[in-house]
Structures are given as C-alpha cells and as structure tokens.
Image 1: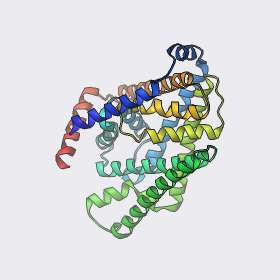
Image 2: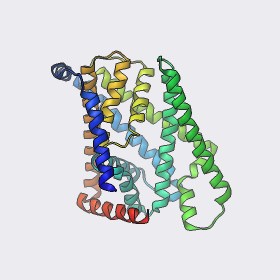
Image 3: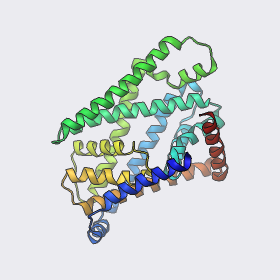
Image 4: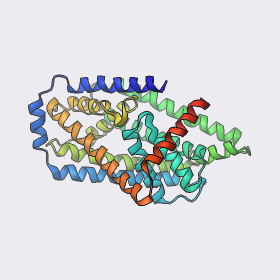
Length: 316
C-alpha cells in the first residue's frame, strides 16, 4: 500500500510538473531568473522564515494544556517537522513533530496529534477567509466562492462535531479522552478561539508579505488582494497528495495564479522555481541548525519514524 501511494504521489507531481513546464520558453525563463533582484529574494525569505517562528508561538499556545512547552521546543519542532515534509513521503514530518514532543516533554502523542490537527483547522479557516476576500476580484469568483462555501461548511461541521465531543465526553476520565481534549482545548473557549483566528491571520499575512517581495523581485508589484489569491490558490494545490515538498503542485499553483494576472509564463515559472527553492532551502537550513543545537541525530530519527509508521499501519 505504501509503495502504491508513493508511486501515485510521484505520478501526480510528474503530471503537474508537465502542466507547469508545457509551452514555456527556456531562454526567457533563464533571462527572468538572471534579472531577479536578489535583495528582494533575501527579504522575502527572511519574512517567510519569521512566519514559522510565529507558528511556533501558536503551537505553544495550542499545547498549553498538555504541559509546559517552551517556545524554543515548539518552534524547533515546527521547523524540523516541515523539513520532514520537504524530504520524506506521506507528510511524515507531522509524525516526526509528535514523536519529538513526546520524547522532549513527555506529551502524549494523542494530545500533540490533536493539537496539530487543531493547528490545521485554524489555518483552514484563515485560508477560507483570505479566499473569500481575494476571489471577488476575478471573473471566476462565483465558482471559487462555491468552493469556499463548501470548504467553510466542512470546517464549521468539524468545529460543531468537536464542540459536541466536548459536550458529551468532557467529563470522562479515560486517559485517551483526556489527552485528546487537551489537544483541542482552545476550540471550546470562544475568546481564545477568536484570538487564535486573529493570530493565524497575522501569520498568513506575514507569509503573504513574503510573496509580495518574491513577486517584486521579478518586477511584478501585486496588490494585497492578488497576493492573498496566490496564497489561497497555493494552499488549495498543496492539499493534493503530491511528492515531498509538494513538487509540481507548488509550481502549477504559482503559474496558474500568474496567468490570471497576465504575467508571462516564462516569468511565472521563474518565480515558481525561485520561491519554491528558497522556501525549501531556508526551512531545511534552520531545521538543521536546530537539530545540531539539540543534538538530534538524523539517522536515529528516521529509524524511529519508520518504526512508528509501521506501528500505525499495523494498527490500521
């Protein structure tokens, strides 16, 4: 089953890479890359990395009922986990985060896994908000809004189910239930829920700012709504189960967005490759630094990940 899913993810990436690279002019793409303004690339990359430190702060808040987790621990795990998603199949970086937190702070894997799911939920709500704000400026907005309504309905349904779970199981004494509730505890507090939605909007606004400077590096000055649309389109594409680092789907989302802004395909492909490479490189470098500081051995971690993944398969 694993081999089949890996093959399918590679096939999906190959298809989207083909769509991204079809009918492009190699020389023009190379020329756009040569004339890229490096100072804006550096600034955009720094802003992007900074957004991950904000994610570390948010994850610490999400884990506050699971123990005293330091910002350093939460942030380092975010970076290392994302590096895992960049280089390992099946988004094993998420499992890596859970395993590291259990080893470092003895946090239950159920609790940290639930908090990770809650993190994704906040991101989903924020992306839907950005999509609604930005999609209204394009002729395709009605179809896009229908999709947004579906996504919003799914998210609201998940929140309702979680609220009902609190309602009926909140007083249970079972260890599993307690760990699960601690991981999603922010969802039952309206004030904290709204605070984290606001904090998530800040995170995604910062990441959107990095895209603004990436585009500016090639001489394209997008409006804030256009940048939000790029971020929204990219995150929709990243839902597709492609190869590690979302190879292919990432490039296609950028090329697709640029087409709506009448940016030449050669320039779009240059931007897509530059943005993807800088994001990949920066996250992995910071993650490696954290691993060196924390004395984490890569080979040992991979072995533990494989064992944990095998246990999950056997359980399933």
